[in-house]
Image: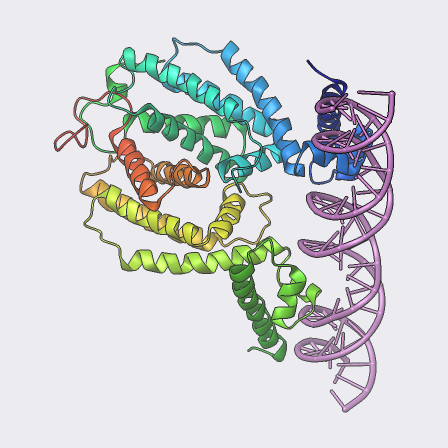
Length: 212
Length: 212
DNA sequence: GAACAAAGTCGACTGCGGTCGCTTATTTTG
DNA sequence: CAAAATAAGCGACCGCAGTCGACTTTGTTC
């Protein structure tokens, strides 16, 4: 049963996140001070620290909310009959679009999740593993219909595509890819290259069937 | 001709970097204050800002010095007759070892260079392009001897391997890979997977020898 | 329900990265 | 060589993230 204390806590936490969404969005993350955030949420500054250990944790909570939404979006527009590359492209481009919508947050979130400082930072592994499950389901189906080699550890396959996503996003942040179209094209090229392989082969995956 | 001013500037800059190497090494980056750094270097605090715009830039300068050294090391132990995967593995593991030696610096450096905040941050593209040249030379040779497909844009090939390096390092920072051996093995698996491709092929580059 | 324990709240405070405006050293000009 | 111009040096200062210790509210025990 939820007592008075628990109820207040939920309310306060929500007030903080709501204030963060508004202020981070309006003013930007760096430019929003904890004092301003507290004031907007109608609480004292140090009360925030009861709920979030650092300012970054607020951001991460915010980003995870957003990614939750992206995840739903992905599930809705999923098309299990499309080619593997197409499906993955759809998923990772949805992720990328979150980043473009929130360039600053996206960067901080990526920095934090790709090169985490310490593993104690509050971070939902639950969402991570849902993404992994999603990918695994796709891989599994593609293996069955012969589009993906069967002698592959699925975790490594996921790692391969995830890494290509990362390098694409990195290229965008570095200015090597500028428009969303550039990113989409670059990502697709890399995905196809990963499917075909870099070493010499007599029959490549693309010669046999045409998946478009 | 170098005047008095230029000479002093070189000396002061060196003093800052030397102080940084000592203090960052002893106390850690975050724990070293700009005041302490200035004091160690024997100058006023704000004088540092004549040479480096931010604290991070000092770190980046330090890391680039280290990577310069790593680059030399790589060139010395290079073996052009080894397989492509072996050569790349040697190179990227050398990079990785720099990171393990300096876990904290490495993380900050990677964060900064993979997801840069703004492109104005002082950052030597010169070193980057030397690494690219190094890779391209290797790829070129491997294409000639038939180990690497000829219908490949080398920039994309480089991107693919670099991305696999990144995801491996990321896994280490996230604790999914723990020891150096884990990292070495994971990286090799990913590299080989990239060579062979993920899509179905009748003859793959490794099938002649052994497959699992 | 009174006394005690536990957890939430808060403003004052600390230490830090970075800036400002003044001072001092070097170079350029005529 | 003097004077004007330019650039380095510097400490006081600012705003901010995060901490501390005192206080208040909620939950528990007998």
